Length: 281
Ligand SMILES: C[S@@+](CC[C@H](N)C(=O)[O-])C[C@H]1O[C@@H](n2cnc3c(N)ncnc32)[C@H](O)[C@@H]1O
Image (cartoon, rainbow, N blue to C red; front, top):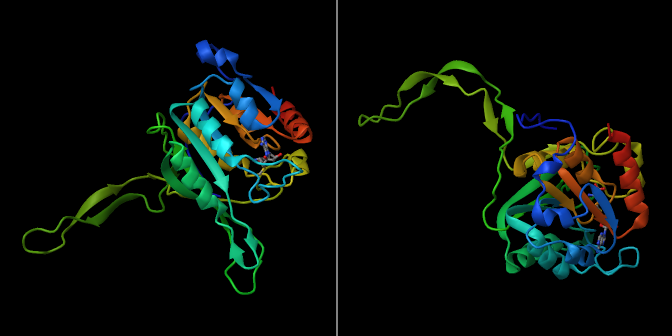
């Protein structure tokens, strides 16, 4: 897991005073049970700052008997995002009969068609993945698509400590003689992360909240936190339309953002509510 630093990190209650006008109509710091496509119809347009979510991967046609309207989801998200808002869409591909579904790519293209910019395609690398296939390399990643409505209004780049620090002779621009001179320079103590983020998974990796594992497909809470810190400010509205065990909502709450969670399953919303309750002051 990478060590990140971000000066904005605080742990206290969300700032309600930043919510004015349209946002008052949102179910702020609450959960909703329902199909997110329908639920979003009740949200004012342009009211959400950040979405960090992952869809039910390739069980699109039959998730607990529910049909997953992917196109409806992308269009509704476009409507409810603020200009400059960011959607983080975490998705992997299943393999059927030796064939990767590429559902991830299809979804990314559809997001582009409905109007989002594909701002970045980041990688979520899993630290402890089991060996799975005898005729291919072990898959250890999922995509984290960064979709934006226009260019992102917030970017707080996360930093990591550099390996070497202090003063060192560094290569300097070549002169006309072609000689690569060296000058003494101070190495930077920190650098911005790359777009490949690595996380441990499982208990005490993804989270230490045992209740979260009552959901079968959680993502690491550090992943949600790193995106929340990168693409939103304190007091912003962070929405997870398919919140499952409430990972995004928990990390939004702990980082002084307002959260909204939605899931089609009442059972999962109950898990999310209990999980957040355990972390409230
Ligand atoms: C991959 S899981 C999300 C897990 C979550 N990121 C976490 O860390 O716990 C996908 C979730 O989407 C929910 N879901 C599927 N279709 C939905 C829909 N149309 N509207 C809302 N939620 C839906 C499922 O119930 C499931 O909990």
